[in-house]
Amino acid sequence: MKAQSSVLSSAASEGLAGDRPSAGVGELLLVAPSAGLLDAAVAALALSDLPFALPVGAALHLALCGLVGLWVRGLVRRGRDLRLAGLLLVTMVPLGPVGAACTVATAALLALFSRYATGFQDWYLSLFPDSEIGPARELYELIVSGRETAHLAAGESFTDVMWMGSPQQKQAVIALVARHFRPAFTPALKAGLADADPSVRVQAATATARVEHEFNERWLALDHAARDRAEDADALAALARHLDDYAFCGLLDPNREAEIRERALEGYRRSLELAPDDDGIRLDLGRLLLRCGLAAEAADRLEPLVDRTADRRILFWYAESLFRLGRFAELRALPGRRSDLLGGEAELPHTLHDVFALWRGDSTEAVPPGAGAPELAA
Image 1 (cartoon, rainbow, N blue to C red):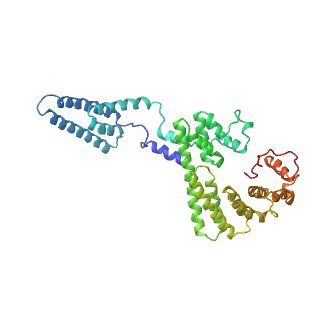
Image 2 (image 1 turned 135 degrees about the horizontal axis):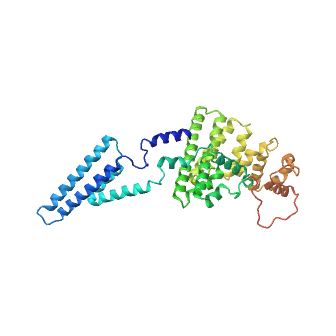
Image 3 (image 1 turned 120 degrees about the vertical axis):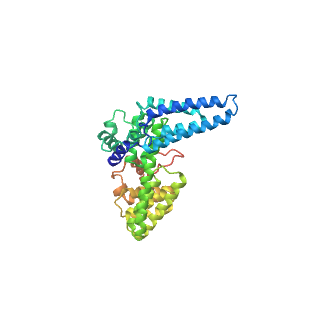
């Protein structure tokens, strides 16, 4: 970011595209009114009753436009700004004195609004401020760790800020999301894309493009490594995990998301064939299979880990696959099978403690008719 800032700062002195014109404006304000007045006289001549007035007027108009073109060419040779001069030339040819008047009006409006308008390079750099800013980094750390309510008066999440914050707050959130993107931040980006403020929409679109570009660049690098090491399970698994994360980012359309998840599944399956004892790959494959609705294959992939794993997450995903398959007898037996991780004395997440207590038979409360058990590993 610092390198980018220095590049843009140096470019500003060279007339960065989008910044306001500077040199040559005074000369334009002399040429444009003069050309407009002369062209108005030519138009009056062309509309008069004199013989051959129309062809003579047209010839004089073209000659005057040619003189303006020669002046613009001189500006090119001197390295002057051509935007307003070019506007005079292209509007004067079809509109005559009206084009010259419009150019003068444009120059006047430019002089008025440029007093307080933000230059292009300043606006661009404001989209993604330097990541070393202390308060911004602190805000990010607090929000992702769930401790924001202890230090922030409002206690708002990124998405809440995008819906209720000021434009400056929204821009700060988008900048943080772009630098530290996680799938949980996708709703904040989508809220920015739908915001009523054009500056917020532009920044959100830029951030979205940046996130997608980073995903694609990483994809190309991992794909190249996987092709070079086709029999390396770690390289294939790294590519599959990246595609899995990309599909889960929430920024893709449904068809593209399904396509990338299918590629991730192929990568996981291939890497598991090369390293059948890698529990991490097996867990990632089982999790993705469940997300894709392939509960039967997920259960088959995860079942070999049930008796030996020390990772409670594997049991959660396996229990979810059993529930989706309707294999309730096995699901009831699972807490007893792994009582060290799922038993009554095990330290389970709060959201799952009551669920496994129900399947163990510890709870005597009846489940309301038609109410299904919550997803165990969502």
